[in-house]
Length: 444
Image 1 (cartoon, rainbow, N blue to C red):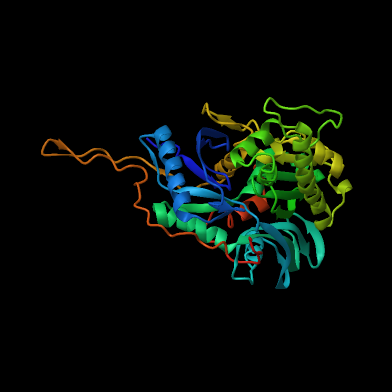
Image 2 (cartoon, helix red, strand yellow; image 1 turned 120 degrees about the vertical axis):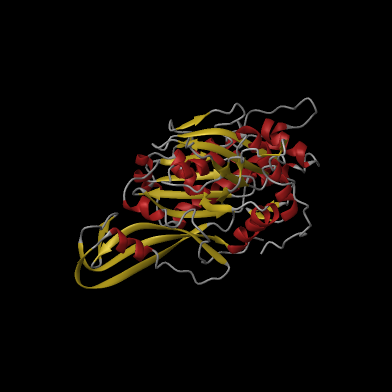
């Protein structure tokens, strides 16, 4: 009997590692079977880049072991990995090809054109090529030139890139340390946008803000496509570190932030907690850092060569940092746009009791991206039938991920399903093989 294969996604963030397993119906409906996570100590992952290979591999092994318990007798044999981090960005580029006289443009020609995109910096990786518009004989033709006659076909595209070290260290942690193949990489902010933004929001112009522990990623959509992507090296952990002036322990400072902190407080309200912590002093600290993050988010509109008036869909926020009390209100007030929280679409179903539909959007978005692919690569295997030799059972089944004898590498220096042409072409870039290379910047 042919069974629908499981798909498995992994998200390695600055504060925790998450793994998710799900099943996809033929219509693209995703059922999330389970999500597991393990917390990471500070500095094991910085700004999206793995630093401590050994510790990340150990914690990921625990996550995979827990996922195996939910899908047994199947076991995880490969994963897809979400990619984010400080160096994730877009760069504009123009591509063109000239034909001998007027020629009918085919989908294959468009695909060949997009594959001409190249990078020059050996310290960066090309993750995706996103067309903004196509040009026929130098004139804009919108999103689909197939079937038109052209002597010259051009495209304005955005190259999505990250620093090479991000992928090298992921390979070390996942593939080499655990002998667990990586089937492909998924650009997490784009997957999140496909999960939580509506088609109308993408067309009208909307900013997606993913506020994490150490970074805040801004993705702007206009005319139905991604037009700008950048990562700000500021997140909710920076507020926690500021609050260590009130409480020396980071764990206690984080608790204060989550329970008392308010990025948009009522200025007339002042009180003290049972342990004599002055809430006004706390919120002075919280407001200062949150305002810095908000200001940097707002600045991205100008950097994208847009205005507030271009973003009629407003702002959609996701990520643990966006859960800070008053953050959405502060963002709306300072940027001058409406703000709503990202939510799961009806095409995603939950079957696990421990799944959070707000805090787990990141790894769920990677799963849903895979569910919308025509044929994601196998992520699990079924056990071989037990063989009987001389009336004795064969060796018991191998564990899903062998417990590795990890030798310490030491610290490594930080060096909505879219139908049509573009959706088909993008599959040639996402989740397949090793990406090419492009410009990125340092992660200090």
